[in-house]
Amino acid sequence: MTSHEGGRLNAFVQAVTAELDRPGNDEAVLLAAVARHMGTLVSVDDWLDAPFAQPDPHRYRQYLLHADPRARFSVVSFVWGPGQATPVHDHTVWGVIGMLRGAEIGQHYAPGRDRRLTARGAAHRLEPGEVTCVSPSVGDIHAVRNAFGDRVSISIHAYGGDIGRIARHVYAPDGTTKPFVSGYSPLQ
Image 1 (cartoon, helix red, strand yellow):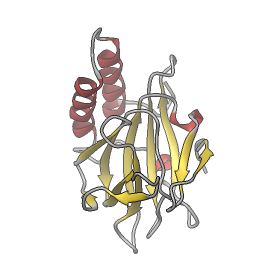
Image 2 (spheres, rainbow, N blue to C red):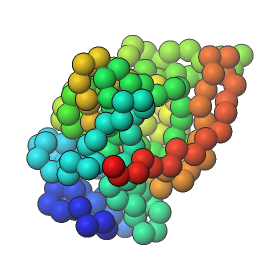
Image 3 (cartoon, rainbow, N blue to C red):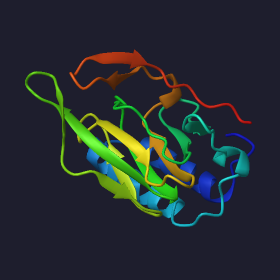
Image 4 (cartoon, rainbow, N blue to C red):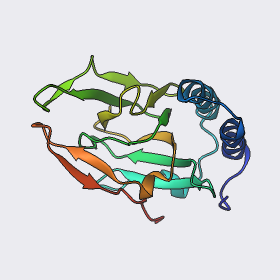
């Protein structure tokens, strides 16, 4: 654990570690449990240290809060400057996202028979305290943006691996993909 971890974040890390240590958890059970713990973590906005909440005027930031020593999961703060957005992308692992501050809008996509992406359902707005999940089995391709054009939003993400080191994909509208590894944003 890093030195900034305490209180609520430490309790979340311990709870997720315990869930992963539990034998026989299938993904649906694990996602539900991690989502419950994430809901507790983002229910109060008093724990994220300022260095992990700093926006960048040019692109969203992805700060590593915790990496499991066995690379089973990571916890990241996503800091969205006004109007910032991701391209359409996947994760290749499970993920649980909780909204801490502000709001974000996510749109899920699915490849059609011709590989072109089509929107899957309506865009979803995530408000403070709310949680959503992604994974290859429940829907893993999406784009996300800050719901606000005039203020910062922050979401907390837990992923089933060290997300900053995992090979993933960005999707073009025609369904073609480009591999990428996101890495993490440096502290300022």
